[in-house]
Amino acid sequence: MSNQQDHDEALKQRREQWHNSGQSRPAFAFMPKRDQESVWDYPRPPAIEENYKPILVKADEQEIARSCAGFRVLETAGAPTYYLPPDDVRMTALVAIEQRSFCEWKGEARYWALAGDPEQRAVAWAYPDPFDAFLPIAHCLSFYPTHLQCWLNGERVAPQPGGFYGGWVTSTIVGPFKGEPGTENW
Image (tube, rainbow, N blue to C red; front, side, top):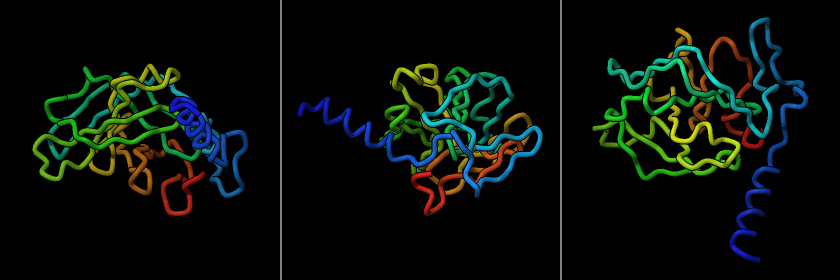
């Protein structure tokens, strides 16, 4: 088998590992109230939508990003992630780091830390060369509310549980959310 065939087969296996696809809400999922969304109704593969709600991202008192543009990505069991155009991000406040990860839907992610952070802890990521379905988010940055203060439409965002996923939990969505131990294949 060729390297490309091996890669394609590995990608297919990663995509098939998920048990839920947004087609039906499991019994343990919370019922959304009026004006709320259930993350269990989000699809897999993920959907991408334009965002027009105001977003503010800060590190203590330093503004990192401000935008009313970009995209939100919606995936079964995960809180939405918001991707902001690089023109709306103070890139001088960030520094690219060596960390990488791979998403079976979006491709390879690259990460940024706050400039001057000796630990170089990842606070943002982007997909510079995503798979075709996610080309709209190419070079857009998403931020971890675990490490930064993030607001969506004036509401302070809570981080998605578990530390790996960067989903933004607000009062407009209900879970439970993947990220805690035992939720790996939700």
